[in-house]
Length: 275
Image (cartoon, rainbow, N blue to C red; front, top):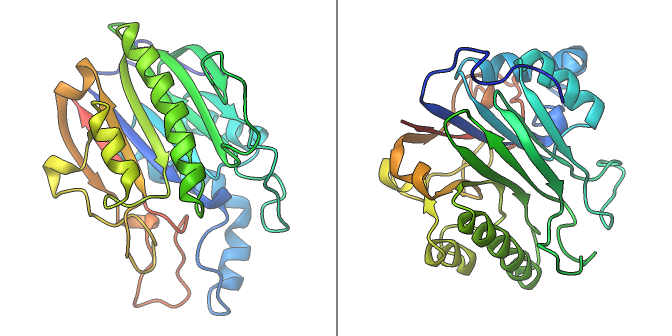
């Protein structure tokens, strides 16, 4: 990881963070009408992703279904950010996703610590976090923020429940150290699911709630139907929430009037800004 710190980049006292499932930066959907255009854009997707994100002047960006570590490094350079890459779980590979589903965090701040698949000293379970799960401790110059990036199991609620237990243990540890906390990612549950109430009961705040409610859809970028992507906050940072919304705009979504159009991913991002 190599770039600038927040102080060196002249960042203000505010903080903007984005959570995004990027579908390995391959674009979506894949249709006969847009296939030629997507193929032509394939070599530009890293730059397109970075350029679109930079419009929002983020201090932190987290990726689910990330690209390779090498590609993440190139995107970090385009963003002018430090980064940490989280290797995917070992149990999920396919022809479509030969590297599995890694994760990444990009940030203007100094990364003081990072860890892939943290368990807080407990034995690791290969059945859990088959997509990705990681943490980083960010030094903003004025405070330290523990940020957790997660992509939970999409099909099995019982596995998701066990994954939530691990994550909450790590969040509790970070809060015990006095850190503000961000939990970002594709959590693969809706606000109606039992997982949602567990986050709330643990003292986390869904950043979308004060700004339109929790049910704002993040999937898909073609036809928004459900909410599975989140930015949760806890600790001192959560008290400074200024705004949050779903970025269903620009290159993050398709153009219904143009059958050759495609979005950067099948999800749309969530953005939150703190004072």
